[in-house]
Length: 531
Ligand SMILES: Cc1ncc(C[n+]2csc(CCOP(=O)(O)OP(=O)(O)O)c2C)c(N)n1
Ligand code: SF4
Image (cartoon, rainbow, N blue to C red):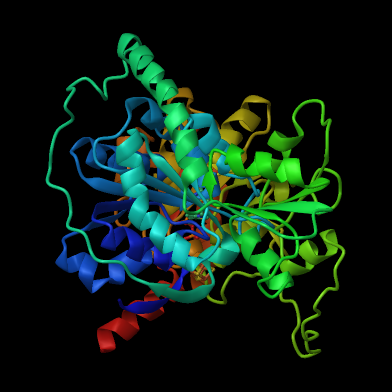
């Protein structure tokens, strides 16, 4: 069979394509973005007419995937870990509706917060929703799990959560492909009310989900992804989850002297863990993310054999794992890599030279001088870099869409004028509903939608707002006299400043739309046009 050199993200995309998927739905977010990008560049996916759609946000992506599953076809929703918070309502309820076509939700977690607001662990969501979780230890497993995850989903009538972390998502390894499967035909659920979560039906479905738990647990005990690997040195037994298994093997060149339970499918495989407890004097748990398994093994009283890991200080409580941390926890020699050459310097992130957000901040900062500091609520996107020098322009960045709604709350508390800064993609993701709140209350806030026609921060994916922002704002009911626009360029500074000053002085809701294409996407489209 063909072998490909793939990123973990790409392996998931290829596994799902080969496994008979009909639709991928996603909202971009590091480290999950490359799944959709791979599908969108895949000739096979095109030939097979596989849908690959950037949705408005993670919740709409999740719901579209549920819809495709309802119609009998296999679907995947993919997102970064914080995206699962946005999709959570649909995600948890999808476990209660059950599936028709197989449904996989891929959540890419980011321990160490390389490019995220937190390092939450998506396994808790899978556990909470009572569904199976798959966590690959390498790229081949990422491929296999995407391929086979649909069978697991269809067998137990539940969505399956496929969880991976940054290091695996963004590193490459050889992946052997399996025979390609054809897509499923459209077919409606046998029970036409399966997806109607009225209380009477939801109660019945929930009981079914509970009845399914014994089978889901057994599937984990018997899974080929979970293993008990014996070792002579029983002073400590190791539970290695997902990519941590790879780190453990790296420390011992593939021959760990301790008994090991490799965990790549959850619920936690009780059969293997019980054997490990019976044979070893203590247990070390290696897992990237939160101490999910460790907490379960310790239980409330933490009695019995010692359980070591992130909670007793054997490993740091936060940040991603690596082979050196694993070696230290096992008290073996650390293999030092090459020192970083002097030439390599840390460089703080910055807005690109020539970026329109720079001109927006220059004008906004000047206009705000007379009102004092501390009144700018920003959002998540390239413009968040306005928090850093030389701009020092913003005072918050909490979650996608929070700028407008936080400004409303602060204005209610008396901080007038309050300013919200949001990008076009984030506005369409979750800013529009907040703006509707502001319209209904005529909140005295100035909303700046810094429109660059793209989702710049995650690499320039299409933004649902392209060419539509002004109409959306009008449609939501903002007074047209207070919808203003300018082109954020240095030569337009005086005009931009005047517009912002006028709207700051207005005691009601204004929306200002500075509009100029992101220079990175502009350069890319010029290059494409020249080819
Ligand atoms: C819930 C959630 N989903 C996805 C992301 C990843 N992400 C960070 S910023 C951003 C969008 C940025 O686009 P836009 O608002 O248009 O600003 P730009 O970067 O183009 O300036 C995305 C998708 C995230 N941080 N949180
Ligand atoms: S990628 Fe685009 S939006 Fe982001 S900083 Fe660069 S020019 Fe600005």
